[in-house]
Length: 309
Image 1 (spheres, rainbow, N blue to C red):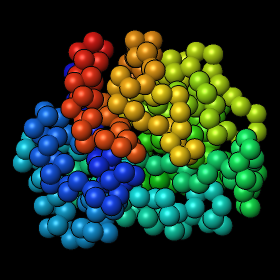
Image 2: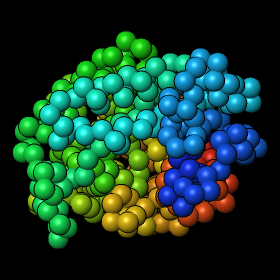
Image 3: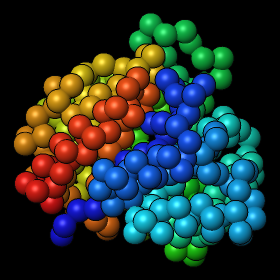
Image 4: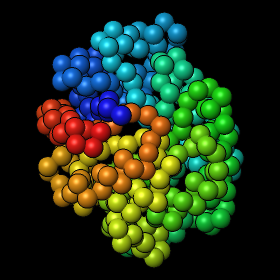
């Protein structure tokens, strides 16, 4: 299956770009000029989101920006970070925000929504020498809260024709390899799978970054994690890793060639694991020169697609 290539637009609106974001229309035009097949929308800040574009007409105008150029939108990274998925006493607020974003997906013709556990891994216990969290939830309670909420999300999104993909990473709770499988099993819904980001997979499976308690890795690293997630990957994000964390929070996302990953080592496993769509997405989250690095990354992922796509 030939791959369609997109890139996460959040790279141009947060972090180094927070005070001077690239206007969304300019982003779409530039990606079109670089022969991207589409974009993955960071639905927050000054870029299109359900709180900025509230009417059907406003949302159609956003959709027209890429569709009139023959492009698609591979997914929505929804703004759920103000919600507490683990420490809140109930999930009413989380579900309301999730539903608002699923409606936004429907209005923009987007069929994938990204989620994460929204809270620091420290809510499950002490993380290395980091300050201990005031609120710590026991593992089984936390797992039940996450699974029950996401099972509801998965079913409601399925009813709306939207797939739910969970991006596991060092920055948020349930970031050990075994956690990933426990969450998948506990949710237990066909419409709930993972987002497999190669730099996060490196920091989770190879380095065990920011894990509460005892560190857990996999001998086969990224490749082994992809093998174990066969049939459970709903979106593929490809980017390099320099084995470091950004602001001691999440994985650093350096452009292809600026990190240490050997893509030939694990790409066959990612491809063999399967995915229900044909998108491969570049993620340059928090990279200082993401705008300038975009063409370099597009050229690199095109080579990967030619070899493995």
